[in-house]
Image (cartoon, rainbow, N blue to C red; front, side):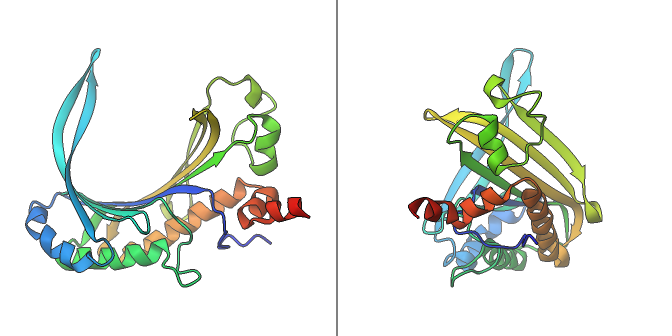
Length: 251
């Protein structure tokens, strides 16, 4: 029986992103310094930036109004907390586990602490959306259908469209799961620094959430993504993430 909550020593995740959306709060800039003091041990660095959104009109890209973003970071754990007037997010590029593991904090621990301090600073009772996204990035030892089938359950017809014949491949599915959770599943191949990679991307979300339910809803999204992830990987992939493949080669 597959344990979807197993913590792997060599996970495939390259980025974990949790985002909350809420109606615009114009007072957020006034209390950023109070929020900073509450989270400074977890996120010691602060950077203020402006995000510019672009939209396409005819043949030209025109800039939309800029948005100010406050980015709190912790280089030691490769994590960020971003705050905008209508969004709060936690991003990790060094994900190991959802909960504490081997005396190290999990993503959920950092999220719970930071969100608690955020809600202490800003009274927001209802959120428009909570989304959790897991992006898995795997270097392909060979760009072939055999390599993919050894580690993953393809979400497109490999027999009809073998990888060796593909110049481009992007697959995107949107599925409604239990408790009205929407999940977007995407896969693609791309080349970076002369290396080929396979991306398996899960983005689960819920809408209209009360503040007291945020962490329980985050747990639900996490579990739904885990189920989908394990349904799309093979036992050989699990062995690889456990580090068992290298041990077998040494023997």
